[in-house]
Each structure stands twice: as structure tokens, then as C-alpha cells.
Length: 322
Ligand code: IMP
Ligand code: ZN
Image 1 (tube, rainbow, N blue to C red):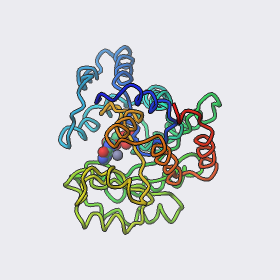
Image 2 (tube, rainbow, N blue to C red; image 1 turned 90 degrees about the vertical axis):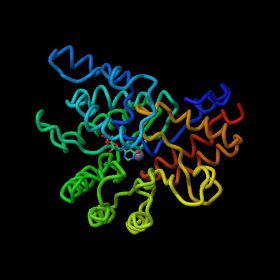
Image 3 (cartoon, rainbow, N blue to C red; image 1 turned 30 degrees about the vertical axis):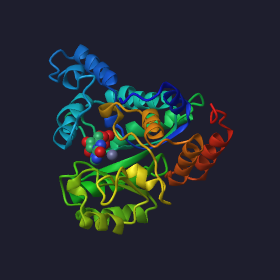
């Protein structure tokens, strides 16, 4: 992590924060992955998956397109391959970590994953994650509220995308608030998903799409295709023309911007650090931070109850001047 002055770090940590772009599996800390590994290895000495502390060394954060996506498909998914690992350890630990960082509202996203060798269907996976989120939200001791977005992976075929839409609709009254398009930007042709995303939208689901996180997916045709689906939010939008640092550009427009972590387990930069970095590098005043935070509220995918809760929280927060 970049060294940010302690005063800013402490303010950014205390600040109540809204996280709208975090991938569940990418948000699992190395320590949590290690404890999952120890538990499974303790039960089954033949478990043939490397210790996360060796496979993903503590200070390694320099992942690129070639190394980042395989980290999930060829490693973390093998490690988190049973329901207790997904529920009790990883999902719960991810919620704890966000709450400990001062996050008060979280839209977590995940790609429904079947684990046939354990008899786990995509439906079982989504149900398991939702059960953890709903139990968490019912516990009055928690200051964080969490909701779920289901992701279509760019490598999916149409039938797989349809399955995600079915799950979104099935669980829309129990915690699923939207649909996402994610995955390796170098893979797939997003145009094949147009009808599936239209069906999700028609069913009332909110829509968020990854765009231009890499140059390879930053084409005009891809942008036109994705915008034609009428998304509610776009993630990343980094490789755009005529832009210095994207945050520096967008914050001066009337486009709402939400600072987010994406994959805090891999990149090790919690949301408080993202705020502290923005404060330091863009010299943001407390008033500008307040505008940034409250501006995110209108972009959340849940309804007025959560919007009211968050507005009240910021209005009553007494830490702005400290
Ligand atoms: P999961 O969906 O909970 O399994 O989280 C991990 C998945 O999120 C990865 O396999 C990727 O498909 C996706 N993901 C994480 N970060 C990014 C990103 O920056 N761009 C696109 N997809 C991403
Ligand atoms: Zn993402």
C-alpha cells in the first residue's frame, strides 16, 4: 500500500463507506484462504492444493491480465470448493473484513459456481451465500448491510448466462439486487448476452457492467453494445480516450463516482485506503469527501429504506471535522 499520512488514513478508516464493486472470491484475504487451507488439509492430508501463503505471497499484488484471472480458475476455486469454506469461512470473513474497515453498505457480487464433485449446484451456491448475507443483516450488532449481485462471466455461453438470469430472478426477493458482466476482458464476445441482460432488466433487476478495465476491451463497439443494454452502473471505465486519471476527470462531471475495491483479497487495498489515496493525490477537502460519499447513495441498487438509512447516517456522523 502507498504510504498515506496517518491522519488521512485514520479519517478514511472511521468514515462510513459504501462499497458497490467487490467480487466475493476476490475479496477473501490471504489469512482467510490460509485458514481454509489448514482446515481442509487437516481433514484430508491428500488435499493437493498449495498453501495460499506460498501460492499468493503476502506482499505480492502485481497481478496482470495473464496472472489475475487464472488465479481464480486454477487456484482459489479449488481451495474454496465446499459449502463450509464458501459460507462460514469466506463469505462471513469477507463481511467481517468490510465492516472492520468501516463499510456500512455493501453490494457484493459473485459468479454462481457449481461444484459437481461435491454435488453442489449453482443454485446451492447462491442460496449458501445469500443465507450468510441475510443472517448477517438480521444481526442488529452489525453496522454493515450486505446485498448480492450475480455475475455473468464473459466466457459463459448463452445458456449459462440465462441460468444466471434465472437465479437473479428467483432470488430477487431475498437479497439479489442486480446482475453484472465480469471476467477476463480479453475473452468472449459480449454481444451474445444482449437478450439475457434485457430479460434481467425487464424483470426489474439493476444492471452493472465491467467496461474498459483493460485496453483490449475498451473498443467503441464494446462500449456501444454495453450502453445499448442501458446499464445502471459501469465498473472501471479506465481506458478511455482523453483522460488523465479517470477519477480526476469524472469527479468534475455530473456522473456519480463510487470509489471501490474490486478485489481487496488480491490487491490488498481496502476501501479506506482507496479513500485515503484519493484524499492525498487529489487534495480533497472534507467537504469534497462528504459530497463524494453522499453522491454514491443514489447509485445503490436497493430501495428507499437503505437510501434513507445512509442519508441519515452521513447527516448524523460527527467525524467530518476531525
Ligand atoms: P467470484 O465471482 O465471487 O468468484 O469472484 C471472482 C471472479 O470475479 C473472477 O473469476 C473474475 O471473473 C471476476 N473479477 C474479479 N475482478 C475482476 C475485474 O477486475 N474485471 C473483470 N472480472 C473480475
Ligand atoms: Zn470488478
